[in-house]
Amino acid sequence: MSLIKAGPGRGAFRGLWVMAGILFLGFGIAASAPWWLGAQVRKAVEQSLEIRLNGTLEPVFLKPAFNLRGAGFTWEGRVRLISGDVSVRYDPFFLLKRGNLRVRISGEALQIRLEGDWAKLQGVTDAQLEHLTADLGLDRSGVREIYAMDVKSSQFQFQIVKSENIIDLHTRRNSP
Image (cartoon, rainbow, N blue to C red):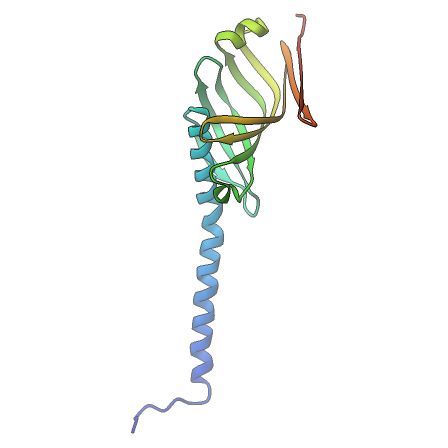
């Protein structure tokens, strides 16, 4: 015989604790998922483009996106982001697609330095971008596809538009 008898309310009290534990665990997973996914996307972008991203990663809650505050990077021989804040949106199912990742990178008031052939093509080295929007398909070997790109500064404009497997390249140098 048991000395402790389960009364009519004791089973319900235990059920509340189990439910609270499940809710707490679910909230913990939901709260940490944007941080973890953002870090995975950041790592994939760094590996694909062979760059090192600097800046503070701030995930956007309930959206597949993050912001990099005080961002900076060097893409050897192409461009260096000196300062600015960048937003990155991504496909949250990229881990299931064997490393294929689609990212949309955007930012305003970015300070950049063009390097190598890109600097020669535009005739500019240092520039303040009014806005940047890049929609890219990445894989482990680099940029797989450019869906769209729009870069605008007071010194130059650069635009790539993809439509029905045709890429139109528009570049224009603004006169001083």
